[in-house]
Length: 178
Image 1 (cartoon, rainbow, N blue to C red):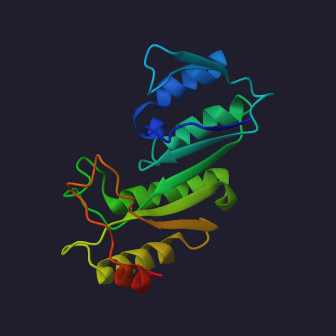
Image 2: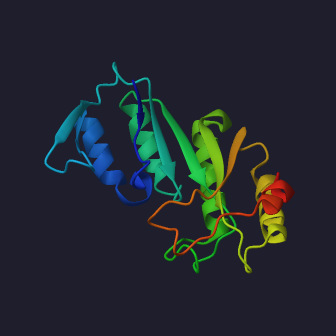
């Protein structure tokens, strides 16, 4: 079984200690988001888990989580988001360079094959123009050379919760960024 552990919430960034305890207890209870009264219990026995995939914007706490996970017999894969945005779009976000340096340390710990860089979601605004994205992507890619083998680059998907705040990326901007 492959577990995508933090797609809905950034477990490494906010709940590392909680997940370490779940790994030690070898099970996790998960509330169904559509049916809140339904709680599923999943085995985290390392003999059943081929890999745990973490999604994070905060790679710093991942180092301790990864070390403990490996000691408990788990294999990890980490997808880390680093993009052009400042705190105006992502309030409370740590400094970009600090997160980039933490991602490099994590790659040194796990290996470049087990750390993926995500540059997403791409939103084009007056402040975050195509040129800003091209420059930020290029600068980050240069600094991550040798630390990651893959990058996911994707444009924002417009859904009900965000449609009042974000516009779709125009096709000509998508093509310019491709």
